[in-house]
Image (cartoon, rainbow, N blue to C red; front, side, top):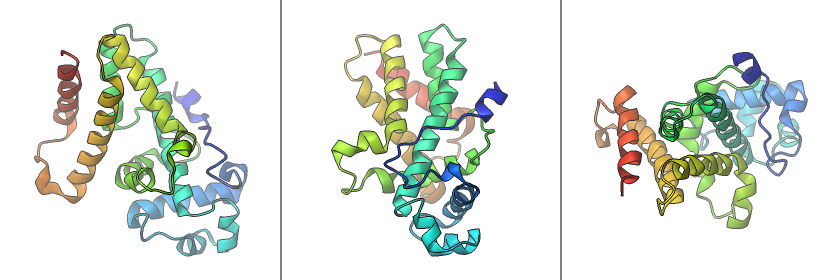
Length: 224
């Protein structure tokens, strides 16, 4: 399974990039180095001038791949959710119980991908960037509602798959989409708060305690 996952390429929308960064050695270096820089400095402080110095190329060369840094961030966000969806598919393939499948989905969402090895991106760094920076790509007016499903296709696909797991477990539950949205955004915001607003979160909200919290939140909601 690890060998199969290692060779997977996430099909990110061509609307996000100008030139596929995986099509060249320079593009792959841009992805690797910019991810490391964004993880350390944050997307606000990050810029293509800084990246060009790290990659040892011109800014113009970077702009041949991405229109701006927000499109680059969207690329990472799509890759992450696409990778998480592949993890969900493989991790639930041999599970029969809808409850077990839903628990696995919650665990992956909260703890991150079980399978991390691939040829292109550091999944640990990607996980951190997504949790830290997602709001800055999702909640912008420039990303109009009619293009969000295309520009965030992998996020929508993962949400749809999670919604289907909820329906399989509780077919008559009236708000599966709302529950999915609540679960995803709660996990993102609470993780951000743990790192930057620690007084808002209990110290022992980690590990299995954290996973159990979301188990209870979801399954108690589904009892109604």
